[in-house]
Image (cartoon, rainbow, N blue to C red; front, side, top):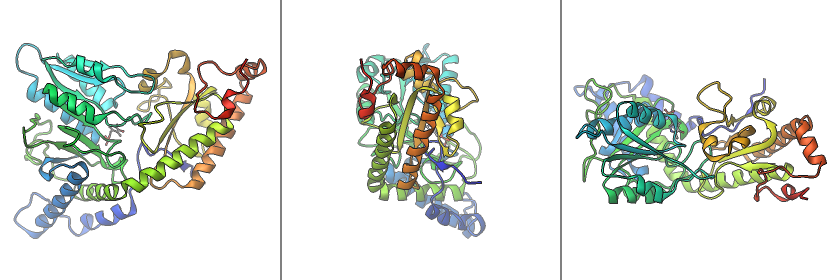
Length: 417
Ligand SMILES: *Cc1c(COP(=O)(O)O)cnc(C)c1O
């Protein structure tokens, strides 16, 4: 069976062969425990961890001592959010305020909801139609009890990039810790923890051509030291904040993935932006009533999220089986409900439009993009031909309400009046 074209790079990425090659010796030859300090096996492992830590730090503009290895971003986010709450939240009668926004990843939203049940005051900032927060709203949400602002660098569904430097500056001025879920940002957009005034930052290997099951948390050690309450107790690894024997091959792979991303970031993001824009133009040239979810500027280069009016989401996903993409329905369950991100940016009547997230990445080729344009156009046309509402609307010469997009090319203007 021919496999579909992979366009789901915001869900996960393949391991870059150069990363895999660097990891292999650490499974079967240099298999020591980095905590074994009495023999060469342990020293080799510790040296590999040291190099990886330096590489993870370098891509963030951090110091190696600021990097903790985790099992991925979900763990890093839990440690950051619950760790800050545990270290800071107990003082006084009030347990403290945590500010986040409605389009964050479930790892953030569920962690803050857990703390809310425990008495913390959670503010979830709304977003505009492009998924952007209002910085004035952020400022006025920060009160004297606020202990943490948790905002993502880039959204995994609609690609919106938050103004991380401006958010960092606001938090610094107000003396509030800033945690950034940069899982979609590291290696894709310019981030620098010092310039952007980030106190804690999480990322993961498998979204940046490294292995699954390994990630890192940046926790600033100096000026002043950011304190987190340990969530996984044991042998005292990772500055006593995260116990457990280190995943050496994974950590080596994460380090290599950071190094490759750092070196290739500029050419690769320009290439992805060009391919993404080509995909967008190609699809909207052949189809009307297509709307972009998320902004056209300040957007992840490899992300395109489109809504197709007059088409049912499930039917479109079934029809597009030759392309591996994500639908705009809740990605973490079998539910067909529109995702919390689309619900935050679209009025209810638009949520039944089929939405597809196209995620492009390092292995995406121009030929694949051309093929996906063809396949998407064919599928949407075929389904619309079967839609009585679409036929009726087109016969009456109206263009679809609320769905035309100025960026949709010349065809979307057809039929007005
Ligand atoms: C994938 C993702 C996560 C979760 O990362 P894991 O390493 O898979 O646990 C968190 N936040 C965002 C924005 C993501 O895209």
